[in-house]
Length: 201
Image 1 (tube, rainbow, N blue to C red):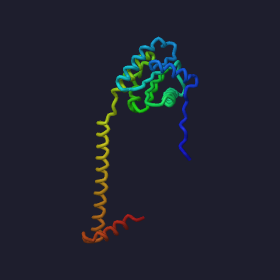
Image 2: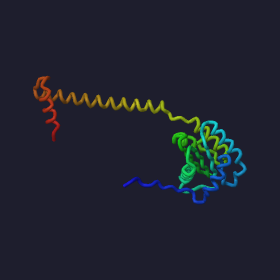
Image 3: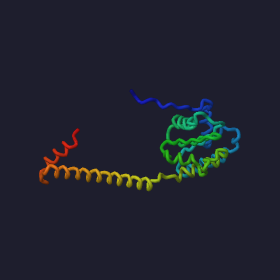
């Protein structure tokens, strides 16, 4: 049996053809009437993103929230699938946000950028500011390799310590078995037989 298909829920009220037509002009599609006067400001952020190396960056501002909220990421995924090539997409609704990228931003960069600078996350009621924060954070976000390396070294050290304790305890058991059997130190086979028999059920 092959792998199960991944179920996606792309918003059914979003016309993909019209959406792609909007994005073709400046990489911005604002479907929320409240922000339709901000296209040029968001388009400026798109240009800045491309200058920072985030190629083919798209920003979509939806008119309302969706359930499940993963629909926003599914929309970005479907757009990238249809368009092909390298693409990064930021999808925003009044209270939801999702990022998607093919071959550019890591999952770590996207998640950090989605969190924004503030405890409350990106300022979704201000699409230009939210888009700029997303780009700036994604561009500067790097995985904390130093901390990860330290944690890995500590983990290996703990494992080594546990291994030494087990080896030392095993050696003591063998020495005790040797003394109990009155065997000479060079009688290793006999010692092994005694130690194995002492642990048998």
